[in-house]
Length: 87
Image 1: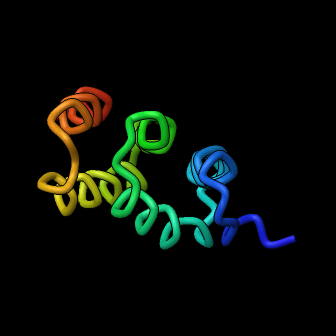
Image 2: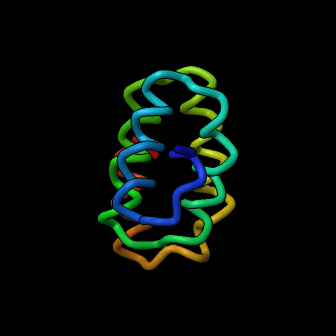
């Protein structure tokens, strides 16, 4: 089973966060695409929390995702992610 490329949002939300915690490079691209397509807080929160907790290069990558998608996210999502990432 190819979990990384699942289409179920519930699976993606959990798998990408786990992959980020584990610094599993294979999820970086799909997770970045996911946060560019899905603007719901429910799905963004765990991804960005993982980025913040892992820190380092993963955190920097996720700040880039946020900056690239700031205009796509609703104001509540922008605020939530900015708070998670301490921006």
